[in-house]
Amino acid sequence: MSAKPWWEDAVLYQIYPRSYQDTDGDGVGDLAGIRRRVDYLEWLGVDAVWLSPVFRSPHADFGYDISDYRAVDPLFGDRRDLDALRDALHERGMKLLLDLVPNHSSEEHPWFRAACSSRDDPKRDWYLWADPGPDGGPPNNWLSVFGGSAWEWHEPTGQYYYHAFLKEQPDLNWRNPAVRAAMLDVMRHWLEWGADGFRVDVMWHMIKDDRLRHNPPNPDYDPDAPGFSYDRLIPAFTTDRPEVHDVVADMRGVMDAYGDRLLIGEIYLPVERLVLYYGTDGGGAHLPFNFQLVQLPWERERIEAAIGTYEAALPEGAWPNWVLSNHDKPRVAGRWGEPAARAAAVLLLTLRGTPTIYYGDELGIGGVTIPEDRVRDPHALRDPGTPTRDAYRTPMQWTPEPGAGFSETEPWLPLTADHERRNVEVQREDPGSMLRLYRALIRLRADEPALVRGRYEPVPGQGPVLAFVRALEGRRLLVGVNVSGERATFRPGLELRGEVLLSTAGDRDPVAGELSLAPHEAVVVAL
Ligand code: GLC
Image 1: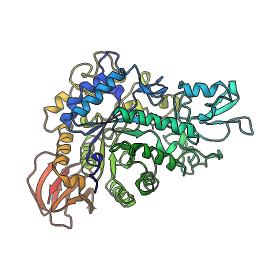
Image 2 (image 1 turned 180 degrees about the vertical axis):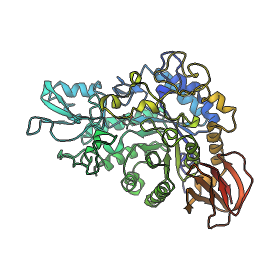
Image 3 (image 1 turned 60 degrees about the horizontal axis):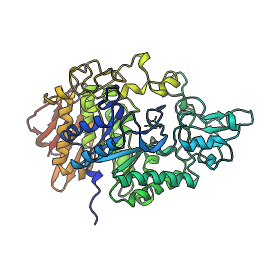
Image 4 (image 1 turned 90 degrees about the vertical axis):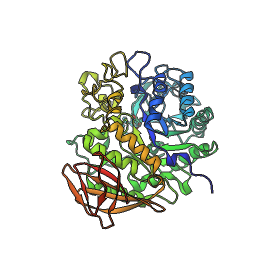
């Protein structure tokens, strides 16, 4: 039997590089800054860091528009800074995951420049071009995720090109073997350099219908409700196409040639579609990101059902994973409130599967109000009424000082109003803080193999209390979470007697018979 891969035991940590630590005084984070904080990451106890893109980019979508997949963007530093960060992490036994953005490049990528130069250019077919539709407008009704038509007219060559996101982010043509070969080479380049894996951007978008069929209208779309104009149609012909799985299998093939590396896919799909990205016989992504907790309300029945559905849907041998927040969606403390975010941290770190922590969640950063004149997110700027993602990308807060230890100048996005208290320096000294809770949970996971390797056994919930057991050999740990703002009592149909290993409400006496939980309290009990 081969050893278990490292990432099954790992706690992953996402860094949005613009917002972690500024060292060159421009108000934007950089690679030297992240390196400066490697000791903190070690203290926190995470095992791997995923960096949102640091590659050369005009930053129309803050690095998710890449113009050179092999170069570091000068905003973040240079190749030596990235080398030094890799080495600093590796020296401490931590892994480094890079962000691969293969679905689209920047419009400034030489490939796209060449494609635009003439219809006969050899790179023309590296992107998705089409003639106008019968009415002279766009070829079909496909919409951009960021608002408006997904087709942009290119006057000099008299055709439209497709962009799932901004017009500055033309989609690559993954049906073209030359595109595949080029991007797989990019992967090899970084794997040889020492990357421990990739998070693949919008994996489910990579192949579109070759017949360009119209997307059907979404019967549930309410134009008056807040939301994205993109939701007007069901993206049946632009996402999750059957052929995408061949692409993922090719990527996995590259990973496998380098040994113990991790392939994560960013995929927003219902669970039964999501799990197909594990691939036939496990030959797909190691971890298709599971965003259920990011999207659900903080309600016991909904969360319980989601866990159960997910566990049941996982194919043989597939390893689960959980996420609470990321740079695209409201932070957990913003969505559910800080007390619930503490309980959610317990869920994230005790459910079966690899957890990903989003930087700043460990401080309980919640909803930050972004004044209109400071909105930077291209999605919000382009699609009126869309909440701005800037609110989930504000700088990490290290100290009570004016720039929160993030920057000596005005940061590119505002800090939280309470940053003088909500920062690493203050929370490190406070045993009741969110930061100390995260650290204690990570330690508990490291000390209790049942939390990593144990079976997941659902325990029927009661009222607002969600519960499950993690069991390994003789060890049984009960996790109980009160999802409400009221005190709740839980009498599970199992022998309940044991030591409380951790509670979000501080030290507790052993429990016997029933479990009384404070509002939003979560506990781990050794049965
Ligand atoms: C992914 C990224 C998001 C970006 C989009 C387009 O969803 O997470 O930040 O805007 O892809 O690249």
